[in-house]
Length: 357
Image (cartoon, rainbow, N blue to C red; front, side, top):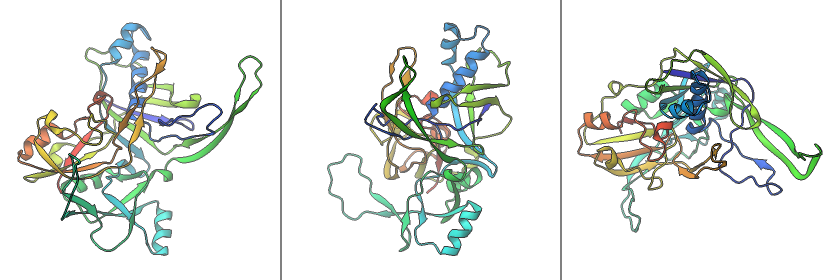
């Protein structure tokens, strides 16, 4: 089943950093929201459509939802997080910069793999190759880049040297909001409770989710639902969609002896940033990786009334390069389009696609 989430107002989603009363005045947020947030929204949709809405039975059955894919729709097409082995040249010509800003489309280059001659380290997962530009150009990291679905397929099948990407800031503008805490008894402002948050107005940015409805689950009678999502009690519309999303293993003709993994959603591994493919029946040696800064994913358990466990996660767009003796069909069958996160894979963490390098 395909659903879409359309913002009706500005949105704000907290990250894992502390925001203590009287100590912090600026609350950092994340966008797009983590899969666990979207998973909660889908459960709300299911529970509200249940014959016994918001009953214990409905809440229990809603745990059967399984998210299979995330993509994002804009007026320019369907997008996914940019692979992190792509980087933007730093010294672009001013004319090119101006044209890119007007078109909201930016040229990036693919980093190349180069062997490391000498390594002395006690680290158990040390890679034998590193990623760097193919020439003497200077590159810089792209903050929250997105690549079109067709370009991602090309990236997986036969990687090119250059790609066009878009940036989140062009679709979801930041709107700062200043507020102050209020005394619950007198309804007057409280001292040392002034705060500022960065809301996101994403009127041209919709979240598309491919998910499995619970077995024997009731077909939703409401085709759409207006629900609160994130902090500040802002609203979104959740509705069913006919938009086709996702990729098929048939789209990728994988070569022998090596492959790369691209993560379209954050992934939580027991070994930090290192995925254990043996758990999924694949024997492979990691030779290189392009991994962003870790995310801190937690939340609040409404039933228990306490914070959830905080996890460090690999960000979406992370890429891993492997050598293997497995057949291409085996690799595609066990990894392509699967959620391989060690924690909360049913919520859509760790959705991965396989490609050539």
